[in-house]
Length: 339
Image (cartoon, rainbow, N blue to C red):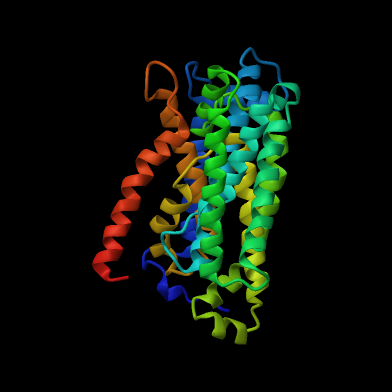
């Protein structure tokens, strides 16, 4: 399906939009790496990347660089997943947690916390989250059946989310000591603090694979805007399209949650902000939303470092403070429009 450029905002082409978003991500990435309690000149950063020794090398390579890369990857996966899910469900209020992936990924990581495996094995926490995300996909299709409708997928996702939330609360309630419960609760709020290259090496391959699945649905999402019957007549396999989107979200979002906790509303906010710039084409929205999600997460992570004088504000708390009012405004707007 060919894309019609006349739907773009007149003064901004699709290539121009991508360039501006990429430039914004680059600036925010450098700010994330260079800004902190100790500001580091960009020349020093480049020297460290080239292998030259520097007193600030450890700070850059072990603390700031992994955090910045994870913020970029997590934000991109959440933004693209939100755009793909909204296109699949044709519902502008959909977001990645709708099908239960975030809840089950969080539950898997909580179980790792609860059993103490996170102390014994450094990779146990992200692996637990990804296992939980993959199990959510299996449960989704067990509940929804072999050829599920969109409504059935939504209802199955809500059921999975409810069960995962209840089990997470149960784990907190049965935590062996209040310190363990506090650690689990604090992690669930979402943060990129103290993340290392180990977290990056575990999560990044799954995020990349998941986003590749999502990118492969670009043509199908555009055809789906015309209706399932028309999309089928254009040669789109609806079942394959659903499977690739759900699997892509499971891998990308599951890996993100497993290393960063629950960071909400990125997949809801970014598609709404960027949709007018691509003529409301869900397929062409995927890459801009990946860049927009990365920019939003990087910006929010920079803000939480300087927002308070005491303990660092959790990233998931800030995105929720931004996203909750945004969600309410969308609901009111849709109600007025009679949707």
